[in-house]
Image 1 (cartoon, helix red, strand yellow):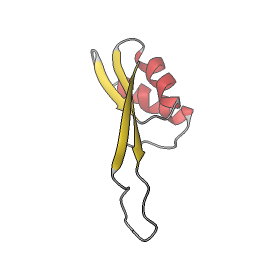
Image 2 (spheres, rainbow, N blue to C red):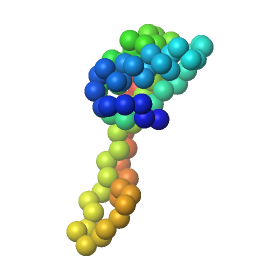
Image 3 (spheres, one colour):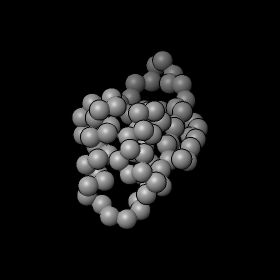
Length: 80
Protein backbone atom coordinates (compact mmCIF):
# COMPACT_ATOMS: atom_id res chain seq x y z
CA UNK A 1 0.00 0.00 0.00
CA UNK A 2 1.33 3.42 -0.88
CA UNK A 3 -0.23 6.59 0.39
CA UNK A 4 2.19 9.42 -0.36
CA UNK A 5 5.80 10.40 0.24
CA UNK A 6 8.54 8.61 2.15
CA UNK A 7 8.97 10.94 5.10
CA UNK A 8 7.85 10.94 8.72
CA UNK A 9 4.75 13.05 8.13
CA UNK A 10 3.40 10.69 5.46
CA UNK A 11 4.24 7.64 7.59
CA UNK A 12 2.28 9.07 10.53
CA UNK A 13 -0.67 9.99 8.28
CA UNK A 14 -0.79 6.46 6.90
CA UNK A 15 -0.57 4.81 10.33
CA UNK A 16 -3.23 7.08 11.86
CA UNK A 17 -5.47 6.33 8.87
CA UNK A 18 -4.97 2.59 9.37
CA UNK A 19 -5.50 2.84 13.14
CA UNK A 20 -8.80 4.63 12.61
CA UNK A 21 -10.09 1.74 10.49
CA UNK A 22 -9.24 -1.31 12.61
CA UNK A 23 -10.21 -2.57 16.04
CA UNK A 24 -8.22 -4.71 18.42
CA UNK A 25 -4.63 -5.83 18.19
CA UNK A 26 -3.23 -6.13 14.67
CA UNK A 27 0.02 -7.18 13.02
CA UNK A 28 2.01 -4.79 10.80
CA UNK A 29 5.23 -5.35 8.88
CA UNK A 30 7.04 -2.56 7.04
CA UNK A 31 10.32 -2.16 5.26
CA UNK A 32 13.35 -1.07 7.27
CA UNK A 33 12.80 2.66 6.88
CA UNK A 34 13.23 4.09 10.40
CA UNK A 35 10.36 6.62 10.33
CA UNK A 36 7.89 3.73 10.33
CA UNK A 37 8.92 2.67 13.83
CA UNK A 38 7.86 5.98 15.41
CA UNK A 39 4.74 6.29 13.25
CA UNK A 40 3.45 2.82 14.20
CA UNK A 41 4.13 3.37 17.89
CA UNK A 42 2.44 6.77 17.90
CA UNK A 43 -0.66 5.61 16.03
CA UNK A 44 -1.19 2.21 17.68
CA UNK A 45 0.62 2.48 21.01
CA UNK A 46 1.24 -0.96 22.47
CA UNK A 47 -1.80 -2.50 20.71
CA UNK A 48 0.17 -3.75 17.72
CA UNK A 49 2.55 -6.54 16.80
CA UNK A 50 5.13 -4.78 14.64
CA UNK A 51 8.11 -6.00 12.63
CA UNK A 52 10.45 -4.49 10.09
CA UNK A 53 11.60 -6.69 7.22
CA UNK A 54 14.92 -5.72 5.65
CA UNK A 55 15.86 -7.44 2.39
CA UNK A 56 19.34 -7.56 0.93
CA UNK A 57 19.49 -8.19 -2.80
CA UNK A 58 22.34 -9.84 -4.66
CA UNK A 59 24.50 -7.97 -7.14
CA UNK A 60 23.21 -7.78 -10.68
CA UNK A 61 25.57 -8.75 -13.43
CA UNK A 62 26.18 -5.67 -15.57
CA UNK A 63 24.98 -7.38 -18.75
CA UNK A 64 21.64 -8.41 -17.24
CA UNK A 65 18.73 -6.03 -17.77
CA UNK A 66 15.54 -6.58 -15.86
CA UNK A 67 12.52 -4.61 -14.72
CA UNK A 68 12.30 -6.35 -11.36
CA UNK A 69 14.91 -6.45 -8.58
CA UNK A 70 17.36 -9.35 -8.42
CA UNK A 71 16.74 -12.34 -6.18
CA UNK A 72 16.65 -11.63 -2.47
CA UNK A 73 19.92 -12.88 -1.02
CA UNK A 74 19.16 -12.32 2.68
CA UNK A 75 16.40 -10.98 4.92
CA UNK A 76 16.30 -9.92 8.55
CA UNK A 77 13.26 -9.32 10.71
CA UNK A 78 13.35 -7.00 13.71
CA UNK A 79 10.45 -7.20 16.16
CA UNK A 80 9.45 -4.32 18.43
